[in-house]
Image 1 (tube, chains in turn brown, blue):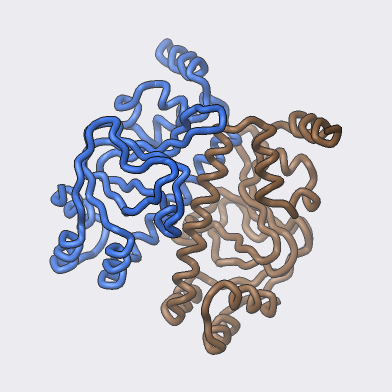
Image 2: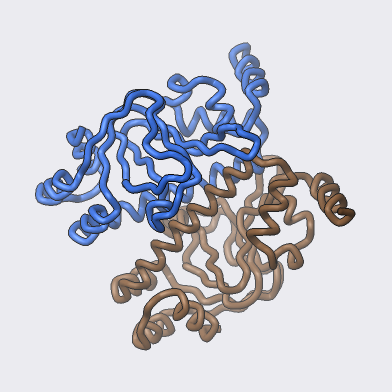
Length: 192
Length: 192
């Protein structure tokens, strides 16, 4: 599992063999079955987590009991609750395996230690979080401004591989549109 | 104008008199009249900007020509386009003064220099961006999950001072609900 992470991080940041060794020595690897939780609402997020294989999703339950999807995390991406991890406070989110998944994880302390020892990792992390903020703002803008059709089109463009990996009701939940509306849009597009 | 910033940053991060001097020496101060732009769509964001007095708002124009508000930035907060500043790419956003405003600004290079010289400033900035990401995710969740009433209630709780400073159509734009819906909600609440 660490091999996938090593490949990923070497492509993303300038790091030495020694840096890789440090990351390997502090990493915890974990395998999840489908529908197994990495984090449940009310728990404190303890790990910075990289998805080396599989597919995780982050969701939150609203007051009326509906599941709303905040994030899809396929292989070669990160999944964590940054606020809960930072302040060690209970999370409002759930992170669950949508497919059998393999994870590479670090505790907060170990990751801070890596930041101290590997400045390039810290710079890379800073870039990642800026990017994440940008994408979240982008999605928020779409949520308040776009029609259901535009939301669906943007989703297909931004996450081309995901549509075939998740059931339609999850895409609807991610977009904040009803299942019926999404079915109608797809039906019209298939016809065209 | 720098005095307000000094008060703010001393309350937020552990910094020395020398740090403050360094920040003052690199800062640019700027005054904006109401409706004057700090950044226009298509321009590159050149500054990290602190609002020391006044009220700025960030908006984006959607395909149908409607203005959608991404952020309100009252005094003692920051306003910038992190993605455009980081990569020096054209911004999709506009930042305009909603009230006469006073700004304290740094170029990207100068702020990076400050980060090098003042590690506590970098730590503080990291916390701020994590917080920003959290709030944006929170707002995005509300946008895809909440009713118009819940959106309005959350806005009142999260930004208690803002409702009296902006016209109702801007609150509607921020929430992604129609002006008519917002008027109806407020009418019902006033009656209760």
